[in-house]
Image (cartoon, rainbow, N blue to C red; front, side):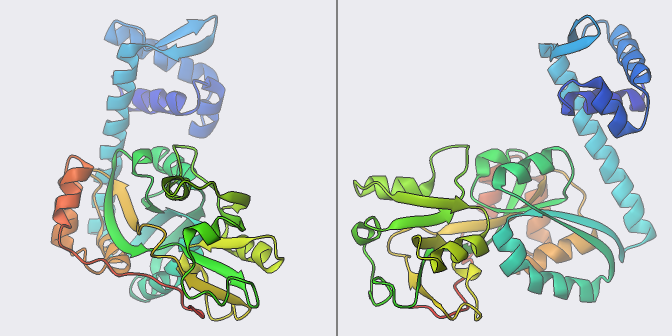
Length: 330
């Protein structure tokens, strides 16, 4: 069994059993990949894939176990290389982040600026997407850190370090009927068309659940993954915006932000990495900048934890900071 055979195996599995796509990703030939897979199956004594002609149709049950173990081996190999890089150069390297628009636009700029002052030789790569897209990036090993809110079920093999809490906020144009309300009720909110974030496909959204618990059905006029787009359509009078409060800043002088903490439960934003990942010094520092309460000792213990419950216990009693709007808020 050779290491390159495991690379070929994982690449095929992660490219929809498409040998051509896997070969292109690995910068090698399709016949070469097919030959090595056959040699690996002959050595193991069982089939990893079922075939129809030359096409792979599915992974066998025992093959799925082999693929999973091969992925772990390749991740460990990457950690070994990280350790080598760390010993050679503690101040340089690369860090890839997968996050949502709100985090990238409104939360991370200050963190990244401070990080770059300490580690100017670390190359940063910022990838934006929905929670589902970020999970796909993490599964494909395209990002080192995921920064997201909720959606824990999409990241079963990710250590999630809590960063801060926030409540949804209501955003309306100046002069809107709700702008003068001291405390908007959920019943009043349900009477207006709503513009909010694109809902996750992984289950029922907490926004719908909140309205359902009050016996109400929200009138969702528009959803978008970008808070700036939501604000644009709020300005056009298409509806009432429901967004993260940090997505409103001092430039939004034509908008009024209404507190909705009495309507919606708090959300927790977390930063996550693969369980067992070797964290280089600059990676530890990035976590500290985003979550100052997460010291190195706690993060190291979280890295070795086997499940989400064990990680959660490490942060019991920690009062997470509450992020609010930096613009005008009522």
